[in-house]
Amino acid sequence: MDIVFLRQLRIETVIGIYDWEKAIKQPVMLDVEMASDNAKAAASDRIEDALDYKAISKRLKQFVGDAQFELVETLAERCAAIIRDEFGVPWVRITLDKIGAVTDAAGVGVVIERGERPA
Ligand SMILES: Nc1nc2c(c(=O)[nH]1)N=C([C@H](O)[C@@H](O)CO)CN2
Image (cartoon, rainbow, N blue to C red; front, side):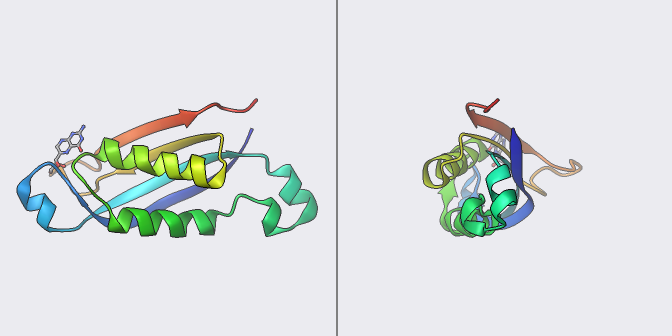
């Protein structure tokens, strides 16, 4: 199985369980790993045959930037669904870090894997 990845995609969003958090935007950092058969793109050298990380970044920035959720779990789940449903990705792992949310912690958040890992 090959992978296409995005690392440290930083997006401001409304996220949190407290009232004060619903009135501001806070940064989240996304690491995304996506199963992909990269051999076809490597052979043709054409973006049409590749899983386009730029297009996926753009879509996630739009979705997360406009989103409003309480839990990081919900936000990560919705991002996974977009990647799988709209870009035809069979397996995805997302690490979502709500950076700065807990004093003295380097990061807090979730890691989820969705879909079937191809052989
Ligand atoms: N498992 C989770 N725990 C917590 C979350 C969350 O989204 N998932 N959120 C909060 C608060 O919003 C916190 O980030 C505010 O600083 C607490 N725990």
